[in-house]
Length: 96
Image (cartoon, rainbow, N blue to C red; front, side, top):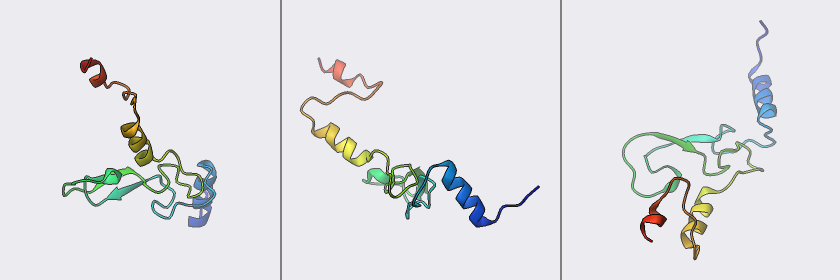
């Protein structure tokens, strides 16, 4: 069995995930460990290490091709005049 060098392994994984530039926060993994349960959402957190989506690349692992910014999406949904309910959220129906 051939052993890959660290760089060959990194190059192979980057090619598989179509990463051009590694995200500096998650090193291409797309997730990171936060030091509290607050994760990327902010707010009050507990005293537990929590893994969640990276708040720099938003899961893509690529610094130049981030996926949807969940903070902006959440903000735009909360400030929309007619917010759409999230899938499975029946709170809008209950208010009618």
